[in-house]
Image (cartoon, rainbow, N blue to C red; front, side, top):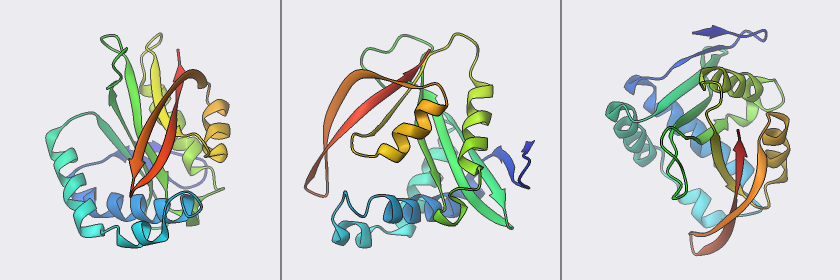
Length: 171
């Protein structure tokens, strides 16, 4: 458990956190991706379905998920584990997700979550992450934490909307 300067506690998540993580995941998507993804799709996202997904993830023990708690609730989360990239070497890590409740944006919670994740990464172990190509706010955040674009892109389809994701890497 990490106590931050802004009265936020960062700790390992467990299955009992699934609903809170799902809530943060969806409200973050609905706020951050309004200009990228169709409103109908964002409106259709179901917290119950996402809670089930997070229960499975947390129960499986795959990777590590941290939650940031403050104001008597979960304000954000980060999840990471072995890299799923085709060109990854054994031991490489990937940041799968880092999302905040929009009410926590600008309060340093994401910074504290990222610093906690990076403190857990052994020295010399590369970490990658994928982000939407047109999410400049996220690009800036990742660059501030030592990640750099590595030139690898992939196309995805979310709700019949083609999106380009770019990979950031930190060695």
